[in-house]
Image (tube, rainbow, N blue to C red):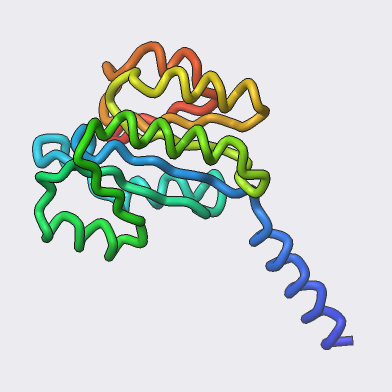
Length: 154
């Protein structure tokens, strides 16, 4: 009798763990700024309420310090360093994730509307879209297009 109760509880825990999978793309130069006071830990905590972070990438430019790169890695995010435009690299990666069948939702952490075409494509292909913004006044176009809008610090 006790063993069957344990098995039921384990089954429930396993079912809860099988949530939907998220692909998260962080616009590093636009979000990880001292004046905004946003850290990756709070971003991760907010997004984990919406699913498992299967892809978690922070895009940085070539001027990112080694200390910043290390901090990103220590929070469990993959660092993508780019010499060109960070937004282009991030949008390209996100578009690729749209076609990943194990990804159920795409999350963009940004302050601008440069990712609107990627969000629209994700929606077109049946992915839920999440936008995490730094402030309420950020990117009206993203707020009006994404399925879920999260404003940090709000």
